[in-house]
Image (cartoon, rainbow, N blue to C red; front, top):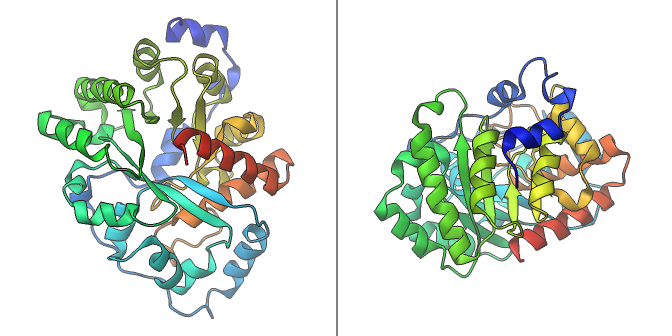
Length: 343
């Protein structure tokens, strides 16, 4: 398959180095650092139950995002984190329709479900909670140890993972991978060990992979090209690299898709804009990474967390950037999600 360095040499493009302020830095400003479930503080609902002070931005949001009837699925969200921070104990349906007025009014009628990613082993022990989430129609699951929690990978965690993967609504293993961003690069070897062992389990279980690769493309590439079969289904989550890097992944893993988040709605995300314009539509997934990545245009002083229905903002922005009807974007993304997750 060739080394990472050789591959990059063949596919070199000036765009990969002409970034100005690094995109990971911009991501860092817009996305809170991942923390294990046990460390997440709850966030009071700061959204007014009434819309009188929110009429203007909500009207703009709805005019831009509520026009299509094509169903869409959020391919990557964290319901456990979202519900914990909102102190919500009900279903996703009850959260989206009854938690507060702003959530209800920013939920498109064509929202059709989500892939809930459980990447904190501490939460796996709360079987009643995650099983209740997965019992809901149009909610499917993925389990794996996030690279920032690699120190939790041990025999007990492996046994838990093997157990939860057997649930009938589980469709993938992840998110797993490598994260060398500031504060996470001090335990690279532990991350690599946990990553490799989980790759082996995914291959054994014949489950698609959900990959988190942040500031670690070279090591991710080297490990995956050595271990993962070419035809394996892969969701490269929260893709923020250049289109050149995307091409590199596509060239080796034909069943790999990349996920774009509401980061694409921000003017500073130049790399992501370029990818959105150029990525083949049969390679695109829409994701919120909820509760992170509040889209541009949604006031953060009123809305503290994103929700799965906000994946529509990604489709809308990609539609504008490409000059392609949003219905087309949604149709491709839906089929891509169904292909990866078997839903």
